[in-house]
Amino acid sequence: MLRSVLTALGAIVTVRLCKAAFSDGDNADVGRAACAIVQLGDAELAADTGAVSDGGALDTFLAINMTLSDKEWQSKFAKENGDAIAWDSDDNTHKKSNPEWAAKWPKWLTARQNIKDKSAAAEAIKKTTLAYLNADEQKIARQLLATIVAEATEAEAALNNANSLLSANSNSKIKAAVNNAIYGDDEGGEDTYKKSGAVTGVPTTVAGCMTDGMSGTVGPFYYTFLCLCLEAGATDKTTCSKTEASGSQWSGVATNGKAVYDNMRKICPENKKTTLSAANIRATKAALLSHISLHTRVGYLGKYDANCDGASANSLCVKYTSKVSNTKNDIETLPWASKLTEAATMLEKQQAAQTEATRAASKLKSKLNAAWTIGRTAKVLANSRGSGGIPSNQPAASRAENSGEDCTKHKTNATCTAANCKWEEKDGKGECKPKDVEGQTKTAGGEGAAGTTEKCEAKLEKYCKSPYCKWESKTCKDSSFLVNKKFSW
Image (tube, rainbow, N blue to C red; front, side, top):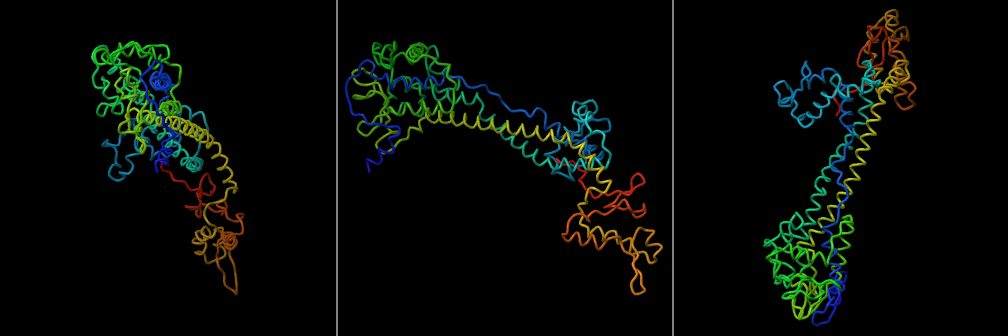
């Protein structure tokens, strides 16, 4: 059982059984590993880009959408003089009838304001075909736009979520976590161990070196560094360095923290050349923990003899009384260890969010580029539809049935043919039918799309009726290209 437990702990704990008085350089190796963690507080973070912008793509997209909506819809968000109608305004008649619009109202309101005369979006739209569509072309354009709204909405949600994660894992918050891990305050020790004069709020005596490097619930890593490098009652040993003596002792920590700190940084020089990264934090932490040894089934960091009281006759070390033994490893519950893990995790989340935000913003811009082209496409489709080239979405059998409501009213050959219907005689009796009803029904049953378009242009004005046909410019046109006139986003 003991062998299996030690194997599980072996990733960070090695067993070393040696006792002797402290000699110069005994903590040089563990001192370098501890110094590397202190230097994490010096390291610079990569530039914080903050929220990723879509370059105004979403606002422009919404402006295009509002431009293509009908005047009645646009009027819901602006008075006749152009002033905006806020959701809570008395001029808003939809607060009670459509309460579900409340969340989207600000976006719609912004879109309406963005298409006012001389606005940037309005001027950009005027330079495209979108500003010169007739009613039929606008309907087609709205339908084309609706097909990319879903993807744009998805990209917008992804961008917003990624930017929220960037805010939650900003450089300032990451730096605060690192500072707190090392010095016990968000400001990098300015309120603790770097203070000129008395130091409060953090451990300042050697006693905590025997209790996990903590005093009560407080135990920043810099205190562990002092346990490894600072003597009690002397300053002559080269403790954490093979060449540099500490120059300070424990009695000075509580009375003049900055003086002790300045001497410690001679042993462990500042290093601002390293970029702070998740990988660097995790590797540096793992390197330090590899120096933990077991003595009498308890974990120690640093040179151990009788105890960790800072006396050169004994040892300069940290005793993990309640954290590391032959049966457990609770190092991660130490404040400094958990804070460093938190900082590393935040850096990983920041990088992932940056990647996702950039991808989502790029997709929004791509959808905007697609939106700019729908004006030209709508004109092409409208022209094709007018020549009978665009099939209707309405099943042929249903269209024939609708047309038949007029044809069956005619009881004579003369009135039937005048109504552009077909007169059929059988057994001395005549019947007025829509032209090609049987053929259309057959096609609707699955034999191809060739016969699925009702020829509205063949109808006379009195028989050119909605919802499938529309009389316009002295011609009956197919109007089955249905779209929702409401604002689609």
